[in-house]
Image (cartoon, rainbow, N blue to C red; front, side, top):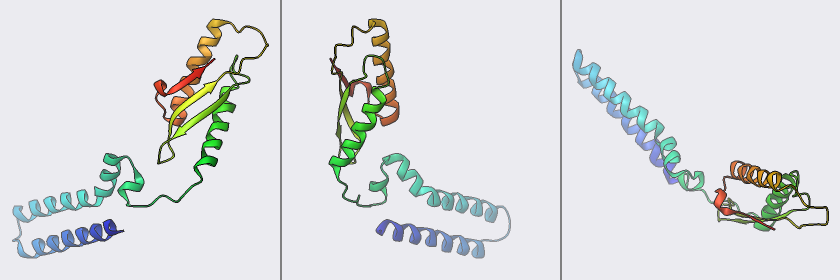
Length: 154
């Protein structure tokens, strides 16, 4: 939480400098420009945490938080079950199963879908190809996985 202390000190210092400048500068254009400049600096200082978050893209790293220990196995199983249910709604994938790989931040890195072919007959290849494309797009959109990292095995 050192970042919070630094943030508060920075805002306080900018506030003190702005009061000193307001008191010491004579009335006129210089005082107006100084107020404007100090208000810009104060605005940037107030927005600094948001800018840091946008640059890093990782909330825990920006706030120096430690992620709580989570049971990675149960998280993987939940994600696998969710993806399996989504995939099984598509024609030709009714008996499919899924496995995922997570990174250290519990974000899905790779998805492998096994079709588990049964004796239900041959699926129309055009329909099957369209189903595969839809599955790739869906998983990519929902879980933020690159399509190249989604494998569909026969």
